[in-house]
Length: 243
Ligand code: BTN
Image (cartoon, protein in one colour):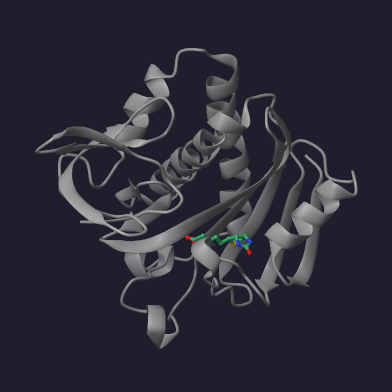
């Protein structure tokens, strides 16, 4: 894999998109920094990315799939990162749909996927992964919701080793997703790691909200929620799911 590394960047996602636009970053290109000065989270939020304590990385992909199926890429990434965290730390991490990784109820990793596409063609996808690895403390605004591998396990980790393993597993799950028409294995594994499965969730859409029991994801990556009126499918993006 080609790697673009700089000590400091505004955002590895922003840089990865630029390099993809310029035709420099091809499929599998990795962008990573020690520190982000303008780290981006989902829904326009910022992502705290202090120097040296975390993994701030973005992967460029050029998948030959329909844009319609692209949200599965984020779920595939969550599956890979969750597995690496479990294997490298022994912690019982879980996936919070669609793509947060949590340990003891607090967030340790977030994923931000951005895509450039036409109706039926993907130019490129940038998958941004932020993991709090050796972080000792957080800004007050997020300290109740955020945690790190260090805080949970009292050990420090070599970040390059974790990045290597993420690339390895991502490739494995990515191939399962793109080469295999049969997504059952992936879905089963994802649903096993889903923290809210069989639990009550409150789905907050733009205007309304509803309650139900989370049943897992379907082959489009949508969350299935059992309500009094039947099963509803929830697309990622505009919604938040609370336990
Ligand atoms: C979220 O949970 O809100 C998503 C957070 C994604 C953070 C990562 S860090 C590397 C990459 N570059 C960014 O600016 N954001 C993502």
